[in-house]
Length: 310
Image (cartoon, rainbow, N blue to C red; front, side):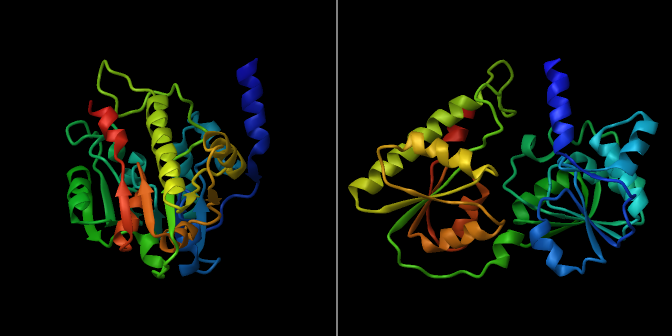
């Protein structure tokens, strides 16, 4: 009964589209990155395939029901079949189904834009290793952070590798600032339980997310104390979609210190906070590496790897 209630609550939160998707030449696969890529196209050219369960097209859902296959992958295939785009773009660069779209739609051009730091192999293609591939992986163009990670992509999929750095980072001009501020890049996620076993755990040695959180909390407390002792301002660069919950979390954790938090209102706003800070500190974040690329003094406390590899 409890599961049914959660399902019903989830369904009521969805936005339902009754009419079938319209034909448009450009389709974004997942909503991630829509705010940075959409300005390059007109509304008549561009639309989003939302696979994050925020919006459901009833027409497509009924087709899935008729197929007796309610998977996200089947939903995407039917959606693409109806829209019949010429170009499909994604920023979700570690979703295995995207790499096999060409098997179903060989006439469509597919483009991947790397969205975050990836680890070979678990974070890139999950269990989709070269030895276990059942279907050919192919993406027409893969815009990646650099040639090294490009070589990793090439192990798993065919297509043209184009190193460009971070697409989003490249969009935001670098500004100079002399503020005596230390920025900490938050990794808080409200939707992950502390008891969740992280995917990178070694066989027979499960590591719970709470173990990672404990070390990250030690880091931010150490940093807050350092700022207090050295008359530096501490700003936390927010991450979670639920800003109120994230702020409440830090209110309790850092109740003995002075700090501010910058809400992540847009995809690119965090780069402005990075530029305004004298020093940027991170434990596990693509934004931390992007800070290095922006020429900022950046400190990396790579404690996650220390726990996982121990």
